[in-house]
Image (tube, rainbow, N blue to C red; front, side):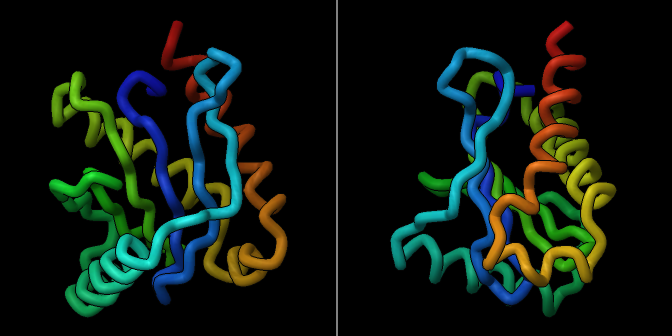
Length: 141
C-alpha cells in the first residue's frame, strides 16, 4: 500500500481540514499523522471540489485529478472526504483499489458523529492509524 499512496488529507464535507497522513520517516510501511497545513490556494481549491461533489452527491466515488498536491478524492458516508497524493509508478486500477480500502477502513473506524471534535483533538485519529498500519503490514507480505 505505501508504495502506491504517498500521503493523504482528510477533510470534513464542510471543507475543514481534519488531518494529514504522511509516510513514516522510519522506513516502515506505516503512516504518521499531523495537523493539516495547506496553503490557501490548495485549501480553496479543495473546498471548491468538496462543495461541487457534495451537490452532486458522489458518495464513495473516486474522482481523479491532475494536481500537484493530490491525484484522487473520495467522498465518504461519514461526512468526510479524503484527498490522496499517489505515486506515478502504480497502475491506476491498483491505486484506486487501495484508495477504496483506505476509505473503507476510515468509514469503519468513525461514524458521522465521531468526527465532530476532530479539529480540536487530532489524537482521535490514533484508532485509524493503527488499523491502517495493520493493513499496510499485511499488504506488504
